[in-house]
Image (cartoon, rainbow, N blue to C red; front, side, top):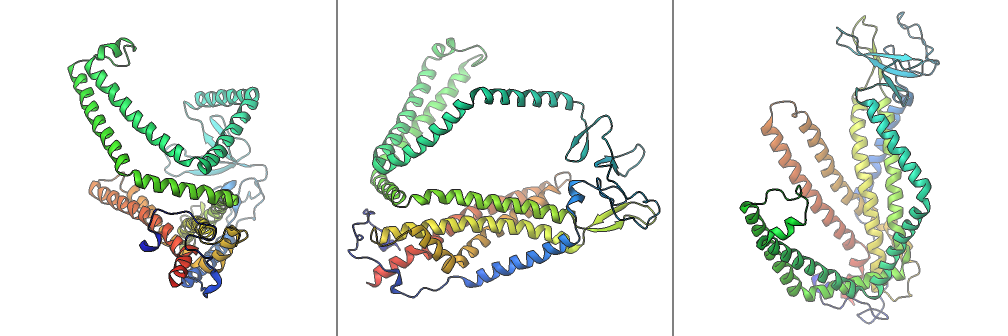
Length: 461
């Protein structure tokens, strides 16, 4: 890969920099990592089976409306229980759920009531105890919402104008990156250098004669400036000077690499100009991720509502919906499925963009119609298994971090400082490993996509 990708020339010619068009049909393609695609499909089928089991033994209204000590759901009619103490099954008129803890009792009573009593607020069919400062908080929130609403009614035109200006600036930056990307990059670099020099000069002046600055500031801004403060400014000035020199040296030494980066930006601008539909890819990914988030919340509510109605103690006449092992396992299964799906969608985005750009780069400018759609076809036809593999590895590390965080919370109220330290170190290592995996898989998607195929064809020819 180093020999293929080396050099400073990054722009394709009318055909390409090698002098001929590269045909993807010259070799026979095969799907990659089909084992993990099969594993992904089996994983989803098993998850749907577990989810169906929870739905069969669940009811969304148990979570939305709540239920009382007899297991009766508030706000609806329920089947009559065999327990004589639970004869009132019709809770249609009692749509609010309240948790009450009487004095001198250790248990919490669950009840369905028609209206919330004094000292409680209504929130999603619940009666929530009103805190002492709740009234002040409610008034503050009400004033804030009212003020925001009034301001929006008055300045809605200006708000829309600002949004349009931001959108226009975004498109302007795209055009500038297409036309004068080198000027923009060097302006940014020169601006960084000037900012470093200006900050360093200000610190040296502040150290040399701080009284000029102090006299122009309120007394509370820099109170009681003495020799120790002056020494602090000297240390800051020295550190800033060293950092400024380092930044300048890096820019001077890396100027050739900066020119290469500018050429890469130029090619990126050409690719976006040739394939403007690439700009819609992040939007589509965002919509897909939003759909996954909504499904995860919906499935979580179903899983949380599942359970078997059981009496907590013999002859206690108190019933709860108790989850069995399958239901508890489905909760963790659902979390891992969400992590895997999120990473899978992000991986599909990386694969589509990499394939489309590589196809545009290595072929004639007009030899491929709709390269983004062709890349999407290649993804679904050949590379879903590779995306499933990469997303599985990342999701596995993320799931391990969640488990460690859950275990760590159990030590918060206990004397387990050593265990907390070990768990924190493990989480830090897993975070670094996760970042490495994301970088590795992102580049692996490029390798298994169009880029690697075209490089292989060029070497063969």
